[in-house]
Image (cartoon, rainbow, N blue to C red; front, side):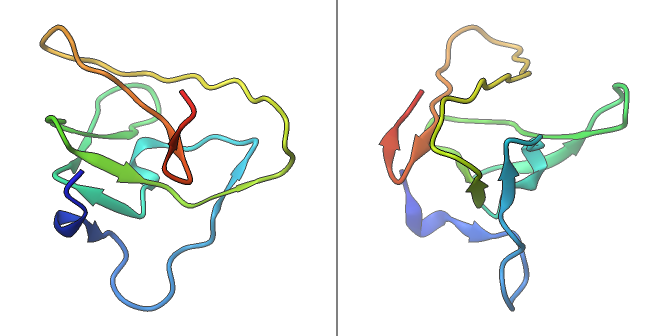
Amino acid sequence: MDWLASRERFMGGMPPDPLAIPGRIEAEDFIVDSGLKTESHNDQGGSQGIGPIHSGDHVDYSVDVAAAVTYEVQVRYSSNTQGGTLTFLADDEVVW
């Protein structure tokens, strides 16, 4: 990953409070990204998404995990091409 290309989403000051797990984390809740933009969706709730995603792009989230237990992760995504990999890391280690 090209960490030098990363940019902070928040402008100066302190980063936002970590997001609670368990809880719902929206794609646009990232604090740092590389190569991505938020985009509006016309789906229920008028949520946002991130994209387009290319090889090497990434987003970072600040989270506060309530307990060291196994959590279920549900991901909603779309693509206009085949292929690609979605990877979750915690402390720079692949967890999914």
